[in-house]
Image 1: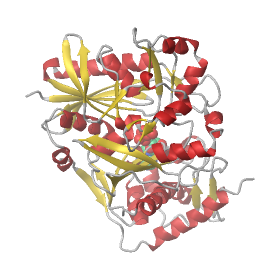
Image 2: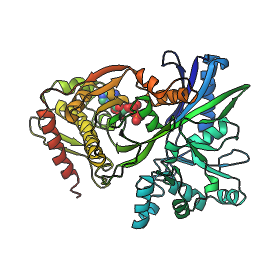
Image 3: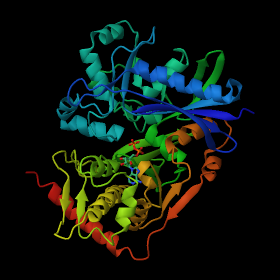
Image 4: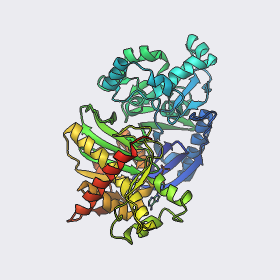
Amino acid sequence: MKKYIIALDAGTTSVRAFLYDIASNKFVHRVQQEVGSDYPFPGWVEQDASEIWFKAAYVVSGCMSAAGADEVAGIGLTNQRETVVLWNRETGEPVAPAIVWQCRRTSEFCASIPAPVAETIRAKTGLLPDAYFSASKIKWLLDHVPAARRLLREGKLCAGTVDSFLIWKLTGGKRFVTDVTNASRTMLFNLRTLDWDEELLGFFGVPRAILPEALPSDARMGEAILGSSRIPVAGAMGDQQAALFGQACLSEGDAKITYGTGLFMLFPTGSAPVTTQSGLLTTVAGSVEGKTTYALEGSVFHAGSGVQWLRDEMGLIESAGETERLALSVESAGGVSFVPAFTGLGAPYWDSEARALIAGVTRGTRKEHLVRAVLESIAHGAKDLADCMQKDSGISLRSVKCDGGASANGFLMQFQADVLGIPVDRPEERESTALGAAQLCAVSLGLASAKELAAKRKTEKIFSPSPDRAAAEESYRLYRLAVARARLHI
Ligand code: ADP
């Protein structure tokens, strides 16, 4: 039996390949390439899709050489979501720069979407009509790039997310497919029928013929042609969903929180999509082993970035790691609350005018109090999301599995457990996204079941709620008052 799987993680800032040892469920080698972004106008973000492909091919080849081509059973793919690539069906050449998920160029158009259409979008796709998602980006390219319109007329245009472009490239143009998790982020995909939605295709002017076929996440996507080797591309998932899978959050209420620059929470809700009025998103968690499951998703724009701000702009700390010691050196934040609304507030407030706030400062306030308040605000942001998710779904949060850079902070994880009142479980392997892609590939190839792989997950540490959570609750109360003040737009 072959020993390895390659997990290809095509992220926003880098493309990475991980060599996954099937027997030990561990990564044994990794290769990384940074990916550049262009900002041609304020609010615009573009990438060169060819660069993404070349670098993906490079990192995959690096892992192949490390493994020996004969030892690789398959490639599992995970990727930045929502980003759009248009390419020529005959040559495989991109027609225009990829429009990255962060790009705001279509925000005016999205704001002008009539209320009844916005409601249809919410009901059918689980998403908010926002520039973030793929639909308005594809529309923009069709409206503004003459070469795209010409190829469209000639029946030679392909439009897809990064996964579909990479699968096309890996398979030498043989396969034009995506997976349902990626499709569910386009705003053109019906959550219930698991198919492109005619009404939405019509509204955005996107012909079905230019879109890939949406397959289950664990489908055999095609066969990658890498030099003289042929290797199955087996399994693909958007990055957040892959992280959820890699964290073994397979049941309702088993959530994962990624503490990175921002905070991303996914909350599985089982086999039916839950509609929400709290500004959360409803998304496909995965379609694996013949079962489609859904999740609620919420994000807080700024989490670890508050720590970066303390370091880079305020000069109060030298490294992010230092914040743990400083926070623990005081008994509380001394009545100080922080609201990290640097660019407004995301779920559940959706207030783009709000700005960051430090509240409750007294003559005795010290740097340690502010550092602690910044860390506490990260946990409070997750609590805001968790409360909405539980209320909207009627499902109780059972556990939180954590990952991302700031999950290294023991104070933050303990405080999170105290604020939520449930244990926070930190795994040994924090590259959950890549692990999810590798394990999905193993499932796709029939090497293991999702359940067997979930049982292999190793906890590094469990942070249990403290017996007395009164202080954490009081801190959350003060944070909510501070949020209200941060929203008093001046
Ligand atoms: P991303 O994938 O969004 O780039 P990462 O998962 O690499 O983010 O996490 C980086 C973020 O985590 C940074 O914002 C950094 O300030 C924060 N961070 C890293 N280590 C710590 C720590 N020990 N305590 C608090 N924050 C941390």
